[in-house]
Amino acid sequence: MLADTQKLIQEFDVRTPNAFVTAATLSGGNQQKLIVAREMHRENKLLIVNQPTRGLDVGSIEFIHKRIIEARDSGVAVLLISAELDEILSLADRVAVLFHGQVMATMPIAQANKERLGLLMAGVDDTVVEPTATP
Figure 1 (tube, rainbow, N blue to C red):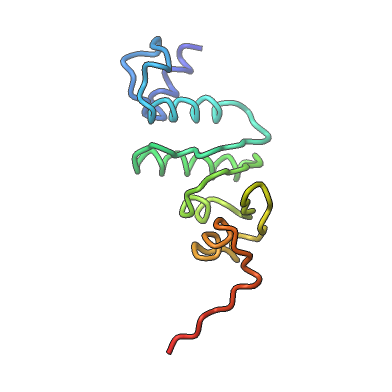
Figure 2: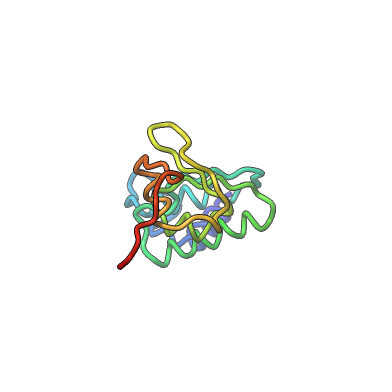
């Protein structure tokens, strides 16, 4: 178990003096990486990731995105919950947008873009939005 822990600490670049410190003593970003490492190390059929890259540096974000894609490609069902539109657009196959607990829309990712998702996140029903003409 200790060898697995040390391997995950190294693989996920968790900045800690050793494998025996408590998670509470780590920075928020390192706690986040530790939790993601723990959950992705398990043999999952379903992986629910809520804000998986909040507080992380660019390198860690790219690493975790890669691991989420690897999980998906290996047959794991992934439910991504994120307010980061770039994250959603780069990782999702389908997207559902909620506003005040109500589903505003669901769509394949090919039909999504930042503007459309942003409007839906603000509670604007995109089926009634008319495109503005440019002079």
